[in-house]
Image (cartoon, rainbow, N blue to C red):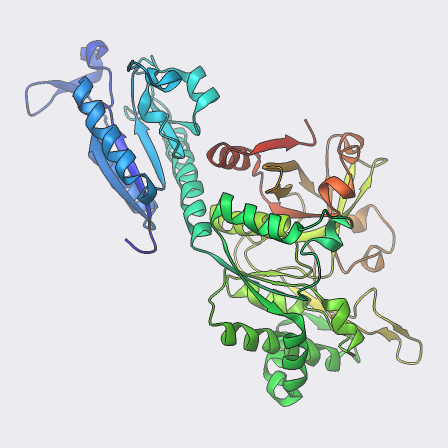
Length: 492
């Protein structure tokens, strides 16, 4: 079905230990066989998953555990593998099949598909866990189907399974995604991020992203964007600019013209998008420095904030590793992310994440975060006007006391880097906080900032990363298992 992930869910047995079912914890079922008193059946598990994940088509199979049953199901999966996004195996046992290597101990978890193996609480577990970890794309989940745990724990176990299926769904959505990338043909895609790149980098990075994630790229020339910008009038742009102004909690005096220019740039990007005929998952723009040479003093920060409000990843300064992290966070957990440069303060165990462009929606909690509009901190200063030229970014006060994950995806190395911390109030620690460096600043308290800074190397890791609110460490590690990437934890 178009627009849905397709996940096989294989039930191995009824979901409880029939040989060890105590009479005090059971009742007689309608067929004369004892069942647990409070029991979530296979039908119930499937119904709950379907209700929680309407974007997923679950294909149910009840395993015939005889050798011929395994053979039939394995043949079906092999034949249809290109149409299956993942597999859930609920319950199981070791099943030896000759001649197929480690997977012979339980071939259903060694198909090469992203696989979730689900243990039923207090059913014996004769599964080949070690081989699964070493040779499969397998993560674990567990269900309390006999109401052994407190209700909140039982629910948390089910929610954990749902989140792992969401990762499979996110990978399917990436395979259907298109990125609109506006750049000068001669420039390196990630040149500003890594500074020095090998020959034919553009071909290599695009090819690897398509190989690993299936994402389609549509490239447009930044010269066409400049032409489109000059073709947008102030009158056309003013309604958008007025909306941005009316929704802001404050607006610096004298910058209305720059806000209109930001709206003109947004409409220029829209004209490029419409001409290309794409409905992108992300919009990336490089070449803003070339645009400045043409007298365009604004950058795309407010334009990208507007795209993010539409559920499209908007990339102010566009880099592949941060864009992939943004897309994955949006699809896996429904959160927008903040792309940034960073500075590490080892004296206070704080990592600082700073940029001018930011989303205002779906960062944390409900609704949009309040923002103000001020001039661009690196724009040209005008003494007579008392302000700078520039982008007029939406400026936020980020939530305080919230877990944060700092991460980035490296397709060529098949690696993801990450560390976690807790957001803090920069104004309580540093003087003149509002006017230090970039307009948007996210300070994150970490356990050992010095451990983190020793990983910094612009030639290897670039100088930009992605901040997503929430502790995504386990989710990212499960993602890496499904796609065969290594995870490098900078704080461990």
